[in-house]
Picture 1 (cartoon, rainbow, N blue to C red):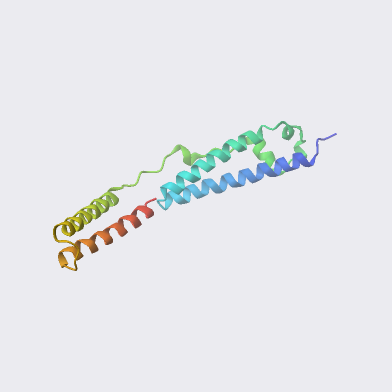
Picture 2: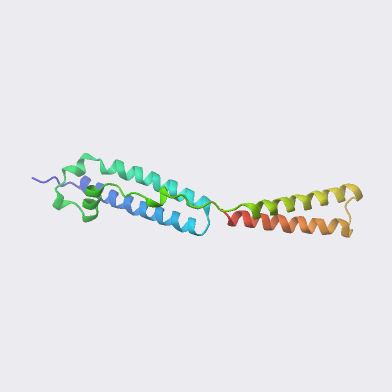
Length: 153
């Protein structure tokens, strides 16, 4: 008599769900890497690795091996025959992006803040142009540096 239980069916559905989540995580990592979102790409790759390990463990369940091949869902049958899918993108790391513009902006912002503090220390706080100009430059450069840093991931 073939082995048919609701537990075996639930395990098959879990396998398919894990495989779908793994595919989504890999696609998300590839899309994030293409847009230059390194942190998100790294997070998605890590999630894909965890899902891949969970899928490999789930494929080794003995109850799935007891189900007749005709009673297996088509996707599960393919997973059991081929094993967990491998990730070719993980083998080739994404090229590193240059952080030079961000470093230049941060240094310029730091210099503008230093000029603002030096002017305030030398002449006190007033509405003098000597103090206003470096202060506006420091605030503008800081905002740009933060936005570039967030955009670069």
